[in-house]
Image 1 (tube, rainbow, N blue to C red):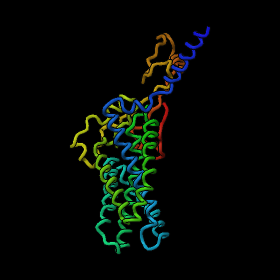
Image 2: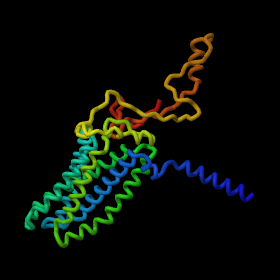
Image 3: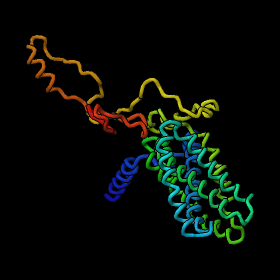
Image 4: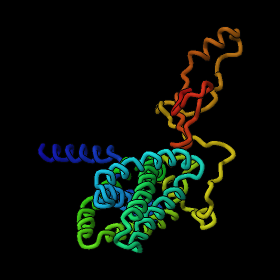
Length: 306
């Protein structure tokens, strides 16, 4: 009796484990998914470290710490508006790389300025904060589009969790400013430039269908080439590809239903018989997060039923 109980408990625990879906280990099982996970996590780490570091370090620059902090906050607003326009035209990869590299170079240049160049240092700091704010905005939708649906929540959670290490390191980096004012800016600048260059290895997601399964996530970006990487404006496909999910597991997913009624039925009887037949429901997903389809009135339509 005890043995049967233990076997039943083991079976139930195994069923619960299978129902939870794939975990973090699935992010590193295949080569392409492993590479994308590492690069995405590095981007999260660099973006969070530099963004938070610049936010903390802003009051230390300029002649008025309150004005410096206010300007470092206000400069984020135009960066968000710029991303709104740029992301739908040039995609995610190149704007993300350029914004991180621009932020890093602006920080590194401060080491060339004399100590009395307070205003020039503040201007370069604000330019760096503008760029890293844009980068931090792009990384959210870009990450969601790179991870497949089966691993999207796990992948974003893993990358965001590891990026928290940047929050642990940044207080020690900003403390170095007590010895040399621009040293923290140089360290954050080098991190932003190096990681910004690695973004070019990630595939572009604009005009591409979101990967749904782990296999689709492995295939997405596997055919990466240098020529495709250097293309600033992604090519738009001739037709928009969509993904379908069958919502009725007991019925087959089919587009057209062939009537199997008798030919001796009258026309009204045939229509009544066809209306009584079950029509399988399908959820039609959009091609990409940033490519929201519109209805006839011009309103946004995230999903639709038929």
